Length: 153
Length: 147
View 1: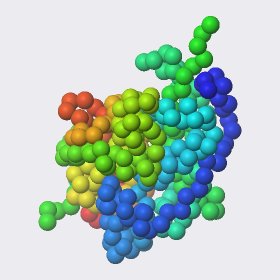
View 2: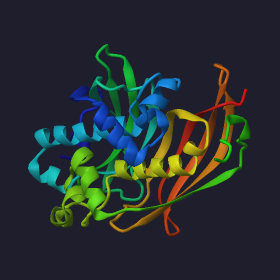
View 3: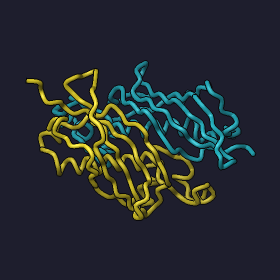
């Protein structure tokens, strides 16, 4: 699979995930122990009125679903090699994710860019989204992944 | 308990040193099994065959560790009520087992919210192993005011 072979402009649903209170609090105790993520009583008194998920967990679940999607949809050889990303941009958390919510995640390739440090690779940008049961946008970001270019002949 | 840092206390140019975090192989694998089970994150042997050639932390794990440094070093000492955005995140170098990461957050802007009682503070956040940057991003968390 080369960068040149990847189509732009198709939104693909990669999966859905239900956030349990247990998993929300477990993630937050380790990585984001702010009161409104880890303490029911404090969360009830916060502007959110209850426990909400760390935005970083909402983002990490995108990765979880993307790895599963790629496992099922790209060659085993490619999947075994792994994918490398130099970073992401425009991460937005629009609304709080609460226990029991199920989010549906999707991706759409939006741009192919040069990658100066390694010209044999190109940068694929994708706009990634998570939406709730009412199709409300909860999170979006622009992911970036390095993909080999077709060798010049 | 020291008084909490409120929105009014932030000024452009302030720098907060965020402490350190020791990363273990066990934690790298545990995070990746749940959220990013690619070969270079979950298995030493498979990692050697992968594009990176060694076991490294998921970039999302590095972000989560960065958040822990921000929470312990700043947000839980302040009136933080959460964040809405992260921009220009760059994973400069891979994080490996036994790395000790340290963080720094610099205030680069402040903006009163139209809602009142709160405001946004823009931070440039940098995370290092020794002198090497491993992760950088900017972010706009929200803080309650005194009033």
